[in-house]
Structure formats: structure tokens, C-alpha cells
Amino acid sequence: MSLEILIDAIGPQEWADLGARFCDYNLYQTWAYGATSAQETASRASRAVIVRGGEVLGLASVRIKRVPVVRAGLAYIYWGPVWQRPGCTHHDLRVILQELRGEYTVRQGLRLRIVPGLALSAGLSIADELANCEYRLEHGAAPERTTVVDLALSLDALRQRLAQKWRNCLNYAERMDITLRAGLEDALLADFQTLYEQMRDTKNFATGLNPLSLRRIQAALPQREKLHVTVAYKDGMPAAGHVCTTLGETCIYLMGASNDIGRQCKAAYLLQWRAVQLARQAGARWYDLGGIDPVQNPGVYHFKRGLGGTEVSFPGRFTTCAGPTGRFLIPLAEQTYRGIRSLRAGFGAIKI
Image 1 (tube, rainbow, N blue to C red):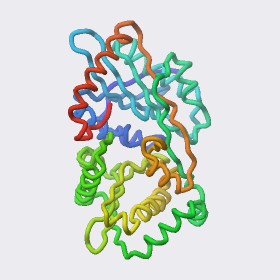
Image 2: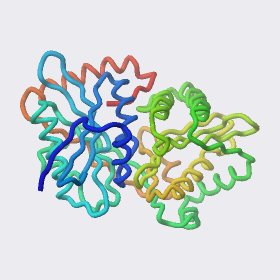
Image 3: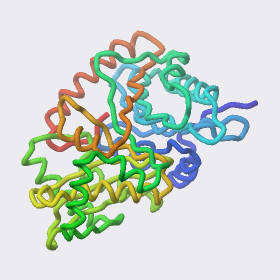
Image 4: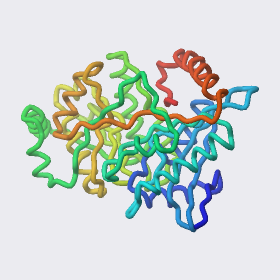
């Protein structure tokens, strides 16, 4: 049966149509995210479609950053490749990983890094398949973790699973005459950006995503892929905000923000509960709370843990390269690049 990998052979509409076939399609693998993040990181966006016998096995949105002069560089796939669909097997994933390695590492001479998302319904280990295809797990950093809520349960059952203190705060928020406005429009993201910047200035932190990047991505996303934005207002004033994405079978919590008013009326609890309801209405099976860090951010960790989800670990970061050039030059180039980007950390540019 014929097998081929198509590189930059389709446009954004066809990419979105193909992505909709896969239950692990996600924001980070959309055309708009790839284009925006490539622009913000001075890299180039590439899209790969793996086809076998006329059937699309998988997709990968790739960012490429080359080292000047030498024939070397980094190809980066975040929360990809996209491959989970009804009837898929571990062999399909292996074929996809082999084709990606053959194209970006062997043919283009790049070091290929893959940071896969969660395979919540796949029933197999992505890490094992990556190892079988000559990808090496990068050591030195603890694997990222998140909390995932199973939306197959009824709303009543989900509410019963909330931690008692969390449920008490939700009950309190529901009595506080908070107005929620939800939608896709930029005006809501603008209100969210104001809330986020106020919170960032108060708490002095930086994140991989920021509201300005989200607004650029939102403007480029097709209607069916747009981010869902909900802002809580108290007495007509923005108090808290929530941004999530619902593609494939998973709703992902991207960003949240609140001010003193929002914290006093517990608006964040109401926003999270409404996000659970939105995700179920959209047909999502899982609600991913967007990462946890019990050590560096214990307050947020306990807040997310209160939703009664299950803590899971991501597979990690995997790389493969065909020769010594990529093995030694790319880490040096990355260190230099991170040093330059640290000067811009306050702007929260999209991470590579």
C-alpha cells in the first residue's frame, strides 16, 4: 500500500477540515497557531500530512528554526503529531513517526523535537512508540503534569466530585449576582487582557502564552476553531476571565485572570464550572486544566485539584537527529536563543 508524506501541500481550510477528523486535534496543531507562533519566534511554519493508500493517517504542524551558515536546525512539533481517530493502531503512530523522522531529520538534516500531548483515549504509550522509532527522551527536567476531568460523568456526578471547600466557593459565587458574558469576539479578549495585565503586574509572573498572542491567534482561526472566552462582571466591571479551546475530544484551559473584585466574589470558581458545562455541550470527553506545579505554584495547584479530576503526566520531550552536527550545534544555538528571549520575557511570547 502506497505511503507518502506531503509537505506544505495544502492550505488552511483543508488543514482545518482534516484536523476535524482526529480526536487529538488541538489548538497547538492549528494552522493559525503555527503561523502566529512562527512569526513570534522568528521561525518558519511547515505542515506535514501523512497519507497511506489515499487515507490520511496523521498531521503535524512543525516550526523550523535553522542555524545560519551550516545545514542544521531544529524542527519542533508541539502537542503533535495528530493521529488519534476511530480504528487507529500503534502501527499507524509508528508509521507517522518514521515518516516525520525521514523527512525532517534524514532529508532536511534537522534535529526533530516532539512534545506530544496526552493520549487519554488511545490506550497505548506514545513514549514507547517514540523510542521504537529512534527518538530519545530528553532528560534534565521533570515531566509536565496536569489535571484532567472526565466529562463522561453527569453534571450532578461532577459536582459531587468537587472538593467540599471548592463546592462551597462555587455556591457562594452563584449567589453573588455575577454576570457572565461568553463568546468569541475580540472585545471579550480585550477585557480579559486588561484583567490579565493587572494580575501579572501584581503577582510579577510570565507565561508561555499571553493575551496579545491569543488575540492574534483568535483573529486567524476559522469560526469553528475559535477560542471560547468568558468574562465575569460584577456591578458592570470586569472581575475575572477564562479562555479555553475545545477541539477534538479535549477542552483545554489556556488562561485565567482575576482582580481583587473577582477574588472577593469567587468568580474564578463560577468560570471553571461554566467551562465544564461548555465543554460537555461541545461534545468534549475531557477537560484539561492546563498544567499544574505543586512546588512552584501551590495555590493554583490546589485550586485545580479541587475540581475532582485525575492528575496525569505528559510523555516528555523527545528528539532525534541523523548526525553529529545537529547533536552538538542545536543545543548551543538554543541556549543562545533563550538568552536573547529572556530579554523579552516580560512580554510572554509564545514558547518554542
